[in-house]
Length: 391
Length: 64
Image (cartoon, rainbow over all chains, first blue to last red; front, side):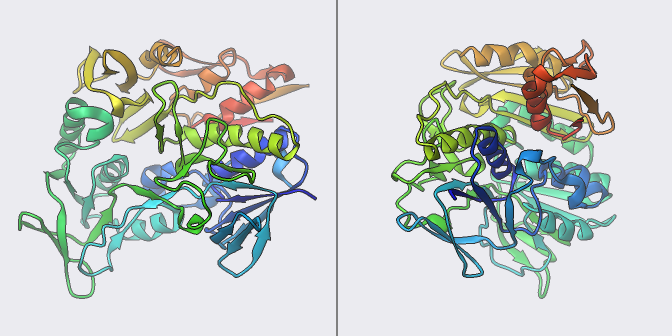
């Protein structure tokens, strides 16, 4: 029987499996995951699940009945891939044969390998990370967050709600600078500062201090900060090490075309979600990895259609693939929401409201709208999304 | 056969992603609050409401 192996048991892998079935693939599907859990929703790990306590079963995605017959190989990450032999090697030594392969291994937090003690330092990617980190967020605990992206800022807000002292250290001039731009970034900084968060901008940590566990940090300007617990949230790297030597283009994630098919091999291979690099043709032709939550679903559905066609010997879909990137973030009682790719903009215009209250900001490149961000202005974004979809 | 659409309003954060997938079923009102326009949805809209449930960031939509 024809078999598909999906490497990665997150949202993208699940959606790819569902899509294979809905596009008529009746062969065997095996989903390989490094964690022991069925696919679950990660964004709450920096927000409500971190605040209330991590219960993975409550975060599991609804799984459609069509994937009830999938074989799950959880807790056994892929460590290698041979495209000629069409096998994936797992950490337990097993070699799993595939006719078609879905790459859905996602990303992990970047480790800057900063010197100093390891105990008390955390990354936040999966439920186990969140559960261990949560235990340290006791009232009065001094938390140092390195990085002021969405995860760093969401955790800062959550930790203040839990009664922690929070220092945020970032190389940038403002939190969430790349997606939000300077003006909205500064406005979000003021909101955090009003809740007692201290920012140290233009700085990084040179060294963590302490004998057995972290007790402080020395910044690159020599300043020292006391802390009891550290979150390192300075971006992500794609999980592609298991594909090294396979012949795929792994320059930054896995390069795929607009059907999600991987370049550089005749074997049916697709990639989905955070690990996939592809052109977002609503904006331009440059392949990009975009780590927004809605894209594993969009790319998973597309990839399932492609792979089902390839394995059936039929033409792959030729309809345009124009997913709309979208992110959202909850910080305190504020909601940020975005459509498009605001990070591409060379100009930001506050279209309505003002950044310290509710507002809508337009992000333009060469005069063309490439993104929109609202702060507490969800319904006002609806016409902008339509304009972005129209290209 | 119809599909029963239920939104857990203790989870819903009114992001409105569902409205783009199934505009005849979900709508944001003028105050930005999610309104479910039809709770019993015809089978012909299954793909749309499935997609709406899939894209909910809070996973607040259930279909039965």
